[in-house]
Image 1 (cartoon, rainbow, N blue to C red):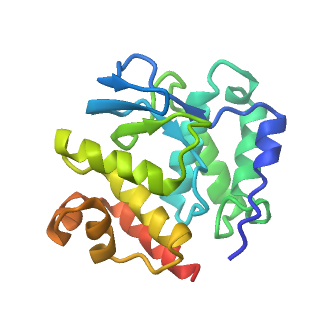
Image 2 (spheres, helix red, strand yellow; image 1 turned 90 degrees about the vertical axis):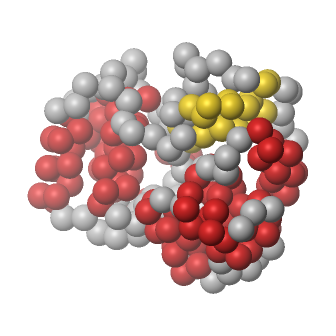
Length: 209
């Protein structure tokens, strides 16, 4: 599967697709990361991995997130947001794995416009957020996550980081047992904390092999 996602188009237009928490205060902050003991839903990091958008539900979530993150610039307004949404939804631009019909896309855009841009879409809970240019590779990040596990329960963010490490650093198939080994826990713990989104991502990552 090609990974030629045209992220440059977003950067050239200063579209916001990443944001650190705004009101939540980290329990620990270093030069490399922020740690939230209770977790935070305010962190957004779209298009952070090579995995693409594989479902209508995921595409709509990305559109809602972009609408919210760009509420203070032109990309929260019509027709600018529609232009942005159409770019993301076009398969040739490398963000999605499927074709969406014109009617379905129009309905999705209309649904997004019905939302208040101030309302943040439901987001995954994050406990460890690494700073840009931290100098850490994924292996180094996982070591830090491992040290923090004693402070908190394993969450989706930790599992996702482990999945990416297995797929792209180790270049191996992602399995529950490998995730558990990296995070130092039982496979039962992984099954208990793995939501449907991560299950889809796991399948997508393994499809690329």
